[in-house]
Length: 239
Image (tube, rainbow, N blue to C red):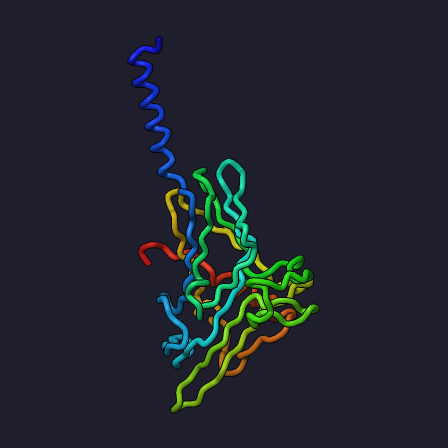
């Protein structure tokens, strides 16, 4: 027969084992994408003052593809998001939130995803869902998808207005614009706030002179590797 002491020890072991899972992810992880400008969360079609450009600015369109999301666990295994491509459209708040379901309760190490769409996607004919050309994010078979779209206006009625338009895409080397992003995670997070800092994107741009990128090429590739890549960051809970 099992002694009472052994039974109590077994119950205590089960309790501690269950308690330890509370420090890992639950079944779901939520990704919430936000627009930032000069450290503040912002919305489209609202005027903001740009310290850098010394003028008023507002953003009309911001869309970005986030794809191939992976959760890397500390044991070396991975969770792959079954929804391969997500079009984040800041005109539609429903698209700015991604729920990764049933990822398990193992200790999490990193979050990986692509900014944009990879070459296989661009060369396929899977034109459905978020990849449907009706979303306004597809050029043609030889140029592929627009990975990031930013449109806005700087200036006021008194001093004149200037439009700016950045359509960043291209999947062929040497000017591919898809970028791989990685974040180290905390084991007790169930929601991650991810910011796209538009001030970082426009930091090196004179919007009144160099105000457009509309085709694949070196300029678009450099933009993706520098301004766009560096603009995407985790928002700390106290921000």
